[in-house]
Structure formats: structure tokens, C-alpha cells
Length: 165
Image 1 (cartoon, helix red, strand yellow):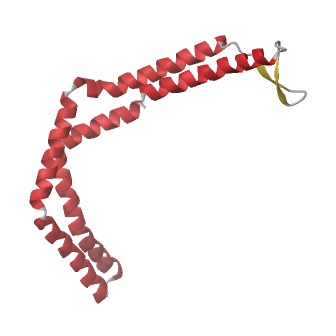
Image 2 (cartoon, rainbow, N blue to C red):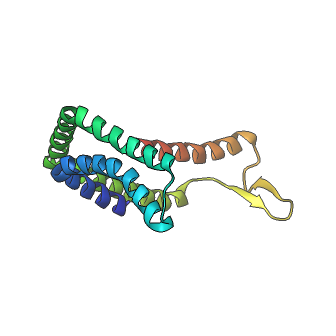
Image 3 (cartoon, rainbow, N blue to C red):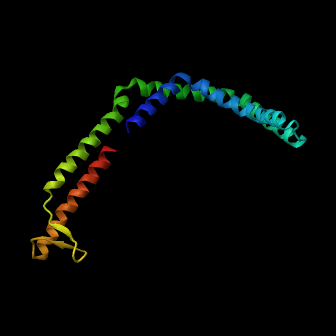
């Protein structure tokens, strides 16, 4: 959880400062990748068949034309992403929220482990018969009450986990 918090915070900072650069880097890679594959095949094998060369040049030209056509939209999208990341990194609770949530989950887990000792159940697994059995209670009502206390405790722990998330 700590690594996830660290990496998400780091990625938000990188996007805030370099969204425009990363978006255009992706476009440049899409344009140059078919040409690089073509050059690699030519250098490795010494020749390239005509269909592969035409297809690579066509794909690179298509991506280049698409990038030129959507330049304004890409710039607008990166500026929106920059503003959103800037808002997230400027609000302290959003930076601390994930860490506080993780600390609350850890505290709940430790409290649950401590409190499970006090759940008044006498349900146990009988090794000789291989069945679940009860230690002291003879009446069915007491057995049901005993199991329901443990079930309510489990439901409470699960509800607490869902509230924290």
C-alpha cells in the first residue's frame, strides 16, 4: 500500500509537470516506430520486401497526419490534465488521504485481531469426529446466540472495511 501511494503521488507530480511532453512523446513514438521497424529489418536482413516498406511508410504517414489534425485537441487535453493534476497536488487532504486510509485500515485490523479473543463463541472443530461441535451449551437457542455473536462481529468488521474504502 505504501508503494502504491508513493507511485501514484509521483505519477501525479510527473503528469502535472510533463503532461504535454509525455503526450507528444507518445505521438512521436507512434510515428517513428513503423519507420524504426523498417530500418531494423533492412539493417538486420539486408533487404526489405516492397509490401513491408510501403505498409510501414503508410502507417507512419497516417499517424503523422492524424497528429497534425488533432494537435489542438491534444493540447487542450494535456492542459486539462495539467490543471487537474495541479488541483490534486495543491489540496493537502488528497495527498494525505491515501496514507490516512491505510493507517485506519491497519488500526482496524489490529483492533479486530485483538477483539476477536473476546467474541463469546464456543464453536470448535472436533478432531475425533471431524465435525463442528459446541463446548458447553446444550440448548439450540444458546448455540444460535453463540454463533450469531461471532457472525455479527464478522459483519461489523466487513462493514468497517467497506466504509474505510
